[in-house]
Length: 356
Image 1 (cartoon, rainbow, N blue to C red):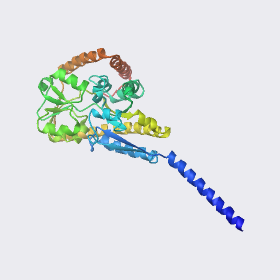
Image 2: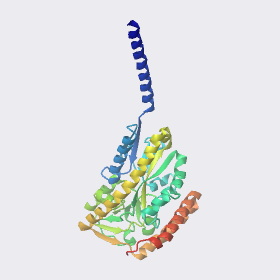
Image 3: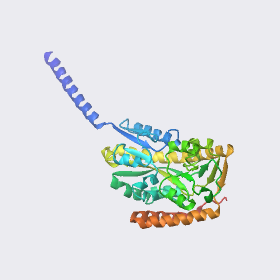
Image 4: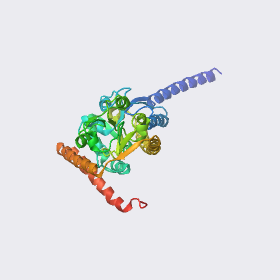
């Protein structure tokens, strides 16, 4: 009887040791990674709401092993400093617009959709996912220890919103215009003789209210409505020639990414692509609704004349020539985009819409 009791106690002891060992291994394998994600978006925007859903999806798919805390613009940092924040690992991820990083390298200005770039967001999406766009962007990002991924496509932006009517480029002379940095602002300033200010989202509305800005470009109809610009401005001139197929991007600190186990890396990459598709489609359908709301609120909309569009084109061509002469990578980006656009146009002249 004594031997049976001793045998039972020994078995129980070794079982406990085995369980403790397994528990210790499991705890080691299931390390929790917590990341900070600084966005450019306002808290009520659809792209930020979808960012929170993206973070929830990553948490669910990783069984709580990868926690991403998304912050709206200005919480940790904002604007062009998002790039440095990711580079310096003040945050592990950033979300902004490629042209905002043009202070790091002029070629970043070309990564977004400049004037007369891809006319449709699907052309831009193909270039970055199936063409050479993502490789070229990472050629820019990798020397700074960053990984680049497309975030979502706003597509054609809305236009310029203003308190007083704008009928063409001449009306913008010497006016203060909120527009993104890099190529969009450079072309507008040169074409219209305007002063361009790359104001961050949270500062746009008060600046327009108090007269520090005469007109505002802020993404699409949905973005402008969400920012409450319809309460201040009752006029717009469209379309947004400076950015016909604009995209947002993700910046990822590569050191932080390399610390993740392979399964968490795969989960993150998959969740990013899901966010990209979902946000692009939801935001564009929101634009349809927002545009109708503008029209229903006694909003006056003008369009650019053919003469103005030609002025835009001449200035844009001249500035692109200047970019191409600055460095080989800028030249390569311009050429690769144009090659892809030509292939797109050649195909869709035969297989485009037939119901017009």
